[in-house]
Length: 183
Ligand code: G1P
Image 1: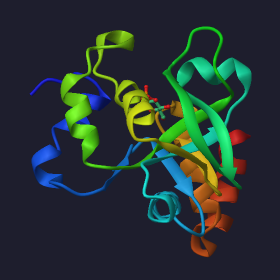
Image 2: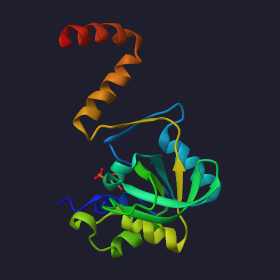
Image 3: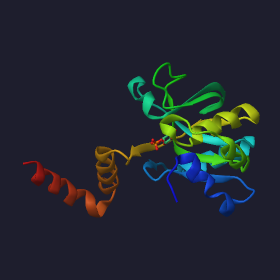
Image 4: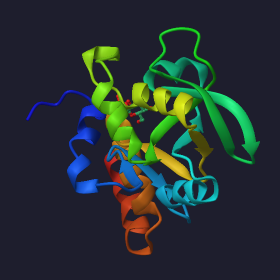
């Protein structure tokens, strides 16, 4: 009943998931895409038979906010991950950030069981992913689509506005409202 980190949260789902690949979706990462982010990753998993995490390029000053992965490109948008580090304070291995979508093999549960607390004293999913990458391989997929960070206050507002502006019933009235409120 304690929040001990993302890795721990995933481990809590072990009995529900059982012995098959599964999707992890972090609720504060919103992806707007014609093919859903998780489906893009599941297709990659199906093609290669390896766990796949969502990647996105971020500016260098933001690499310390994310899991950062690096590796060799094996296909358009797809890298075989050689290094993955949680929130590197310095010398990030790349500017490819892990975004909250993962398709993972059940083997990750055994790894998580053994992983020790990492950054922030939390059981980090990223640390287990590093073990998985070494042991059986792990892919990163630069997904297509727009991503919103709803874990950030302004990002949350931006996501709501972006989705509302795409709706014909809301776009007009919302623009009016924003004009009125910013006067
Ligand atoms: C978590 C993960 C991190 C990942 C991020 C994506 O961090 O630990 O590896 O890059 O989600 O949003 P959090 O944002 O929960 O601190």
